[in-house]
Image (cartoon, rainbow, N blue to C red; front, top):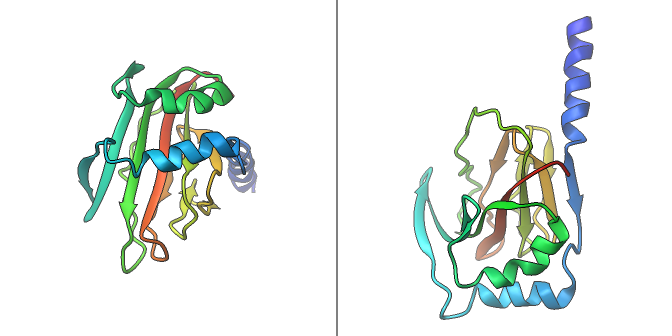
Length: 172
């Protein structure tokens, strides 16, 4: 009986390490990010993950700015108030069925948080710790302990699923 209680306590602790906020950025700042992803001067790279072709743009890698567009993230940086380690914009095309395109890691990372700012509303859920399903909604921000297992799924109801993915250090 003790083991079951310990697992339940651990689950409750991990769920407290997830925070979701709607309307995270003010509307002007959010609209600038929305327009950025469609700008003809905004470049993307392509990656293949679990049979999915996705497009991404790296803003920061290993604390170093890698993009001439990092200034678009200033409102996000100001609200997070932690040092951004990595930040990328990800665009995933619609699929006929929902597909998990997450690559799993078993690394234990101390004092690192992950976050997602969803840029559009769609049905491609982000599942955290096999329990908490986060439905993407425009301007919804979700941050969570980097050690929590996540699964990210494609959408089937919109042409794309788009979001900004962040790693940042420190406690929240």
